[in-house]
Length: 404
Image 1 (cartoon, rainbow, N blue to C red):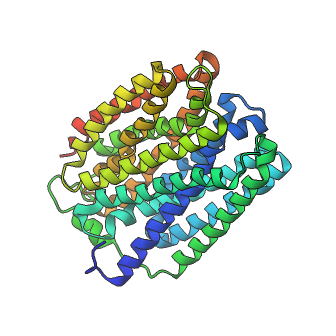
Image 2 (image 1 turned 30 degrees about the vertical axis):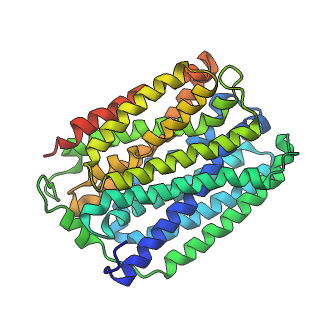
Image 3 (image 1 turned 90 degrees about the vertical axis):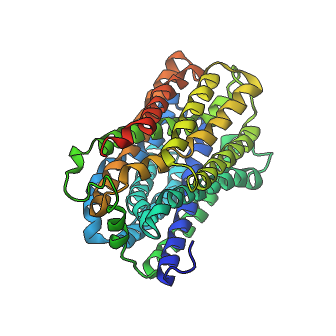
């Protein structure tokens, strides 16, 4: 963060970074507790993924939120995001208490609404609160903070849930307490966003539109191939990412893959997110020196190789492959987003809504993978990763240049 920037800019940017950190922690518990949800509610793999569906289906409204941002303001949308996040997280407590999977799904839907507002408003703020040349780096750093929080979340579980709590029923009281604490923290973040001074980022976003290839406001978003292809690629890579997150513990615990114990799988989930966060931090550093598209292309090739290993490997090799996969896919969303909105100026809010709607992939692809896992086996269901990573490679090599 540049010390010469106005104090109000630094404070608001720090607030956005804090939001990404704590919301990343809140979101992690969905994947961290997926095996427990599956056992507690007696679900199939496909039904297990309904939590992911419920959390991400609100992104169908992302375009609407993008249209409302000029009237509501970026900062006000972040306040709304934190209120929704807190309400949904706290709603998980009575859902678990009553044993109602429907109420748990409703809680994830409300969390998804908050996540929706956070990204549609937060990503342009990360792009606009500073020099245009550093937009991609700030996006990777903000998302890396969310990934760091996702390291802490599963690690916290191994610390607060005793080794003697072997059954899901034994773990429920600890899960409810954790959700209550996270909900209180999110309420505190809502208060911070309300108190933070607003910063007008329109000039910063407009300056980013002044360079070569800028579309500005002259062309409809629907007429810009890089936006539409960016949306499709984000839809696919986020859906693949959600599947890896959601099935990670199931995958390493599977007797036919690695046969890891439940407690050790939580530790490995911490390692996975540590590697994921390292990938985003590395991306933030690399993209100050290397073109983001080149970094994206390299990582897409590496992800394709590792996805092939995940499909066929057993034991420690399978575990290492799926963990390393997290490193290379970590930069996909922030880098694709940054490439797609580059040079849009006053159309950034609308484009952010359209691109953020790509999180619908997180609602749909994991359910498809869950159906495949029920029919052909969990390991072979990871075939769904191939198409998204090929799209990411195509966009890195050619797609983002279509508007130039």
